[in-house]
Length: 231
Image (cartoon, rainbow, N blue to C red; front, side):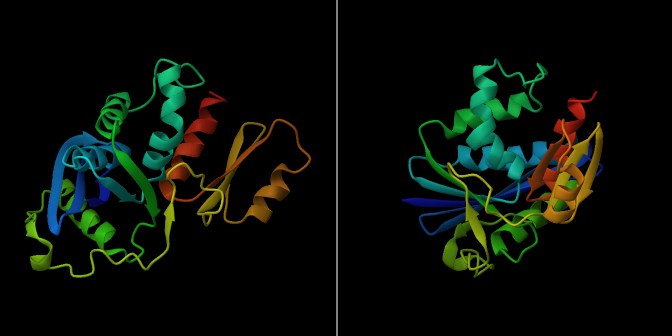
């Protein structure tokens, strides 16, 4: 059996009131999930959406579609180092959202999960629906969650993945389209729209750092990481 899961999270203020949404498609059935937190962050809601959906998935081939590079990078790469280091970062700080990362690790154990990145608001019906669910919960707007046969589901193109989707299970984002480039020179951080601009700033200078981001979430994570090294 194959299970396809779409997820998304949202917060108003980051931190602030937030919501999460998931759509789980399995065995010709669709189940929508959602929830709310009064004081949270976008990343916590993204993690919660994935965890709650995966808790409903039993033994199967599972594909999770998310627009959060934070979640994908964390579960496929970073989490191994965090666990080995006692849930501490390289700077010896406790990993942010440790409680949710531990829970996500638990619910994925023994499961064949493939993580795929989808661009937010790119026309992927599943992602758009999850965004609607997440923002409705964040804003305390009443929304009816579907639980029933796929044939009765109002979103008929829920399984249409004809838009660009990048499989990232055990893969890097090296070939993904850049959202931005971030550089740090002499402790000063700048965001660049093109690699040429970033390269021009760092080329030939020592002690620089630079990295490509493929989403706004990842851009924020990179900046936060850079800032830790100068604080």
